Amino acid sequence: MSEFQLSLLSIGAVVVVMVYLYGLWQQWRYRRSLGKPFQEPVTPPIADAVTHSQDDTEAQHFIADPVPETSPQFDDKTDFIVSMTLKIPQSAEALDGYWQRRFDYGKTIQAIGCSAATGVWERVIPESRTAYSAFKIALQLADRNGPVSDTRLSDFRELLGDIGRKLDADMILPMVDSAIERARELDKFCAEVDQMIGINIVPSGERVLFGSEVARAVQLVGMSLQADGTFHQFDADGATLFTLGASDGTPFQHHTLDQMQVDNMTLLLDIPRVKEPVKHFDEMTLLAMEIATTLRAALVDDQRVTLGSAAISHIRAQVEAVEKSMLAGGIAPGSDQALRLFS
Image (tube, rainbow, N blue to C red; front, side):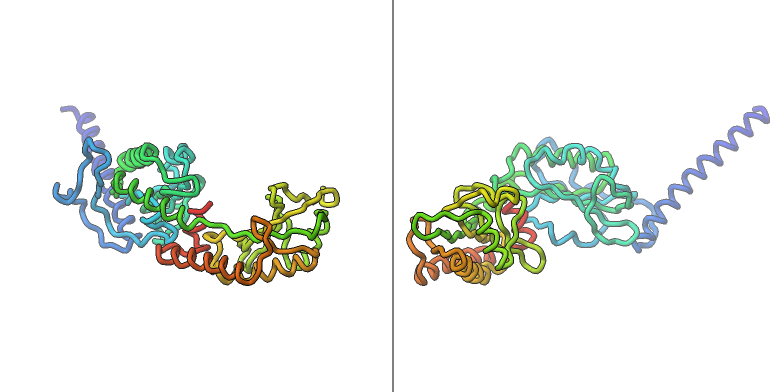
């Protein structure tokens, strides 16, 4: 063998050793960022992992290093959560296939990632440049349009499974069948508590009210006209407590208030979306009385029967029953979960 060939072989051997050592150094840095001692990679025994099968509805658990708990906004009761723990930290670009299809499933989808540097979970968007050691992607199981379909859920699971395999990530893929059952139960529960309570405000006799009159009256009690064409009352955090709109759905608009006429308005409380709905129903009732007094109007039910104290107490009991049912079901009215479910 010539001296030139020996030189080439020596250089090649050096390059191979350097690549190997660089790979070990990268793993050492990753382990150190997670606060773990460096170990040589070990192939887990077959019994420690569940391999893919033809039946894609079977749960798959791939052994993963422990990572901090997920964000409290994710919950197995309301979300189908796919978990990925990465061997090498990746940016949001690693989920490219998911970003392209995240609007295809008809329900809210959220992604969070565990920062490899800090161990803190944060919301992930396509532009995120943080290096993440783990991802969790959650598809909401139900909303006011009903439960997620089994076809879309299976498709979502398959998509995330493909992404995880390409990343060589340790994954947890929940079973589709059990998630569909949870989605149906959740939808049934939501349908039972999804109630709005309205108090109608009607001017006396055949009189009608101009939009400008209504605007002045409700501004006195702190309500303001919003883009949806109704007047809103907000809490200290900026969340809507109740709304006032024309009963026939005609929107109030700033530029037509002087011309608009209305003969029936409804003050509305969306029970699942409001914290402490019983307390705020009491506030809404007092507010309705104040507005009615200013406008020389009356409070009536849907049959235009005057609302007396007995009728108001009956409505209050309904609100209280819904609040108790939601709390018993583990979804507090006005919570982040409730706002997502009843959107």
